[in-house]
Length: 125
Image 1 (cartoon, rainbow, N blue to C red):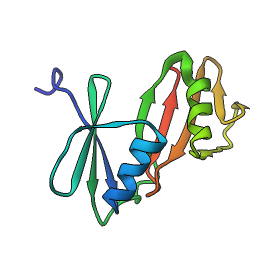
Image 2: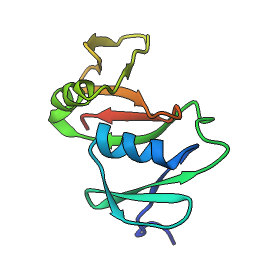
Image 3: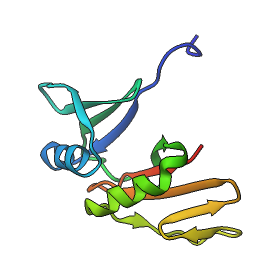
Image 4: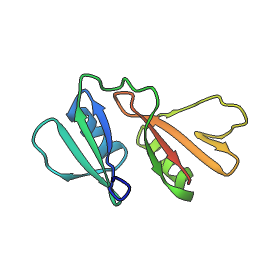
C-alpha cells in the first residue's frame, strides 16, 4: 500500500521565523514554495522537509531527521560548524570521535539540534 509512496520528514517548531532563519541561513535549505499558514516546505534532493508550528516542538528526544551525506560528512560538518551549528557529543561504547564525527567502524555520524531541540543526524551511508 505505501511501499511505493514517498514519505516527508516532518519537524515541529515553536516559531516559524526562527526556524526559517536556521534552515535557510545555517543549513542552506531553500523553501520549495512560499506557503501561507503555519508551515514551511523545503526541497532536499528528491525529498521534502516539512517544518510546521506546534506547541509540542522539541519534545522528541530521539533523532528526527537523518541526512545521508556520503563521504562528504567531514566537509559538511566543518561547513555547518563555520555557520554556527553546534554538534552534539555522545559517549557510546566502541565509538571513536574524529572531532564532531562519531566513527562506528565504517559508519560515520554527527548530530546537531535546531533551535527547538529537534535532533538531526548526518550519516555517511
